[in-house]
Amino acid sequence: FRRVLFRSKIFGFQTGEILGKTLHDLLVPDQYLEKHRTGFAIFQESGEGRVMGRTTELTGKHKDGHEFPIELSLSSTKIRGKWNAIGIVRDISRRKKAEKEKLELEEFSEMTINSSPVGIITTDMEGNIMTANPAILDILGSPGEEYTKKLNVLTFPNLKNQNVTQYFERCIKGGERVEAYAVPYTAVTDKASINNLKLVPLLDSEGAQIGAMAMVEEGRCTVRRHQWLGLE
Image 1 (spheres, rainbow, N blue to C red):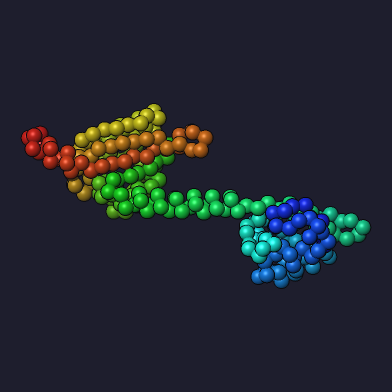
Image 2 (image 1 turned 120 degrees about the horizontal axis):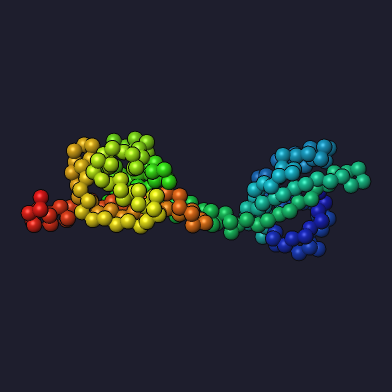
């Protein structure tokens, strides 16, 4: 493995440039060279190593000097009494870029949800609360997210007694998209509000329902309209 038979151009080399050359000096970033050389010395004696028989994510060095993420699968074989390694290398730059963008999008979405004036809550298929943003905590009169995540929207007495559970049942059990307007609710703190609700099924990547998301807008304008009409 110290002298390499090369079958890929992802490192920027032509085949003739690298055949028979020392692998580590060409393809391994300088900061990892000593560690790789130590591991290779152990492999030469035993045919074993930390990455043998596994697929591992590492950093490779391109011909032009830039570093990029790779996925390396290694196996060992003995030829003429000497241990040799066979490696399959994949450039995973695009995958890593996509993973980073996905993480950034999730962080942005979380920040947006947490700063939204609209109450947002998600549940699993049993009605257990999975996430709750600050706005919904205020509407529910909850002391905090961790407390709220212990509740179940299908069994929480305050929701059941005020007929709010029915909307979650339709969404979770029936898979419906539900909209309801001017829904009165009194929190456990005795704070009263009139709210507009929108519930949508949460789906996984294959389209199967895994829960529900509810968006609750506290209807201050609705409250004023009802008062002006003399309905309250």
